[in-house]
Length: 118
Image (cartoon, rainbow, N blue to C red; front, side):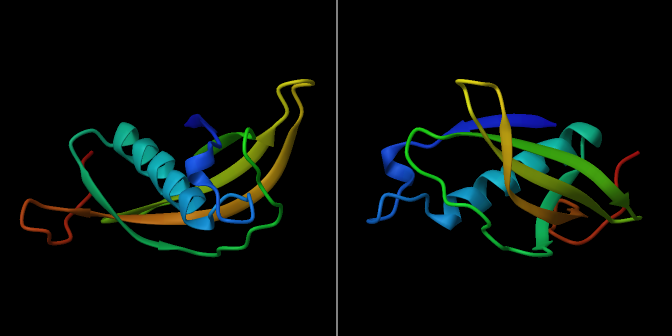
């Protein structure tokens, strides 16, 4: 699953750099979408990200490419490895700026853990 985000003024802190929370939100969203497309009818909630380390700064106007790939699947949970790249629209090059593994658990209508839809 691949998606793009344009960094706008409302995403920046008072120093002019991307707030980390916005990046985490986008990472969570793209991984959730991937899980939901891979398992139609399942209701997933995030239970964790393995590591949060911002390697490069991001500024207004940067175009980010987010890529989510499934790494493991259990009976009730699924995990996606998410990579975030700063995409240079001038030359088409990508620079990786962030990675994490995001884990989801499948829940039923009462919010209790249940088996992943097959």
